[in-house]
Image (cartoon, rainbow over all chains, first blue to last red; front, side, top):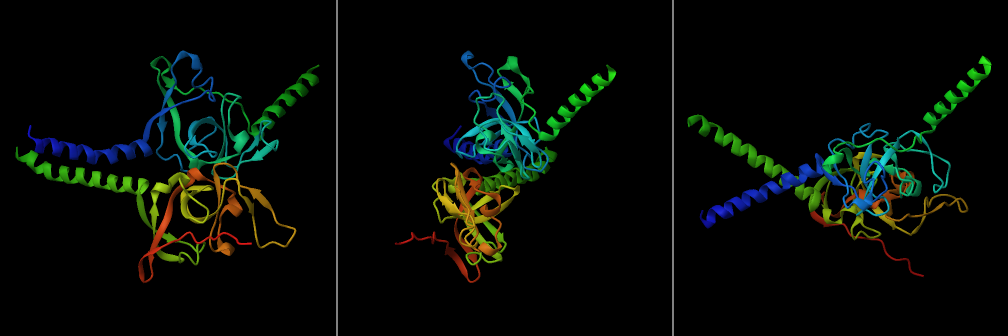
Length: 185
Length: 166
């Protein structure tokens, strides 16, 4: 091959880079999970020497209703724009959330197009520290674990139920059961 | 052989247009973008309609942004919309939420870490941090450096906030 062919191939390769970069940014790409805030669903044991890699869906995640309770999302930290966090969505816009102790109020109402994001691990810096976050900060929804291969599969469920309405329902059903038991006696 | 030649031209045109479109998008998200603005919130800096703004995308995520810069950002209450506002407070600043209230009714807010306070230049008709709270720096998409509109082709938008003097 002549030098001219090399240059031509090089230029053609260069023109495909923006295509690749944009698809990785907006359609889907791998995402790396660091830290232990999603333990045990992701990175269950830090001492094993590996961390989980997930498949991140990015297309259409800013449409209303596309983020649902129970999803694991990667989002830019509201505290530090260069930091990326992996958290579980515990509530979406309109829900009322029972917060943990670090949050100043016991119940928080989520504004529209915001989420309540919390790590599965109790030692996690999340919405209990910085409050509800805008869905605009979400960069992707983790759908599958792709590496290590022995953990291949959908992202495990986890986290607590934090929505006041659901907790009330649970509470009421327990009460109803108690009443039933009493009347049976 | 003839069918291959017949397909070669449209395929090549398609491939080139795809690459060109993505290249433009890449430049728009990472380096520089010109967009049309709308709305009365930035009067008198930007007109209600018909002004094109030049955004420097290297300031995205609030990199090197300062108080007084005009920025374009994703609206926190609706990520499908963009807003154009002026930064009037950075993290750690103490902000008076509304300057028009009676003396004694003022509310003050400390801008949290990694956030900034944004307001429109037209305070009486602007939906901004006064209603949705401090804006996370990560939502900033770029800094407005100039505008094209009216009779001027390229008019710089300066950081026109000045330090208060005693």
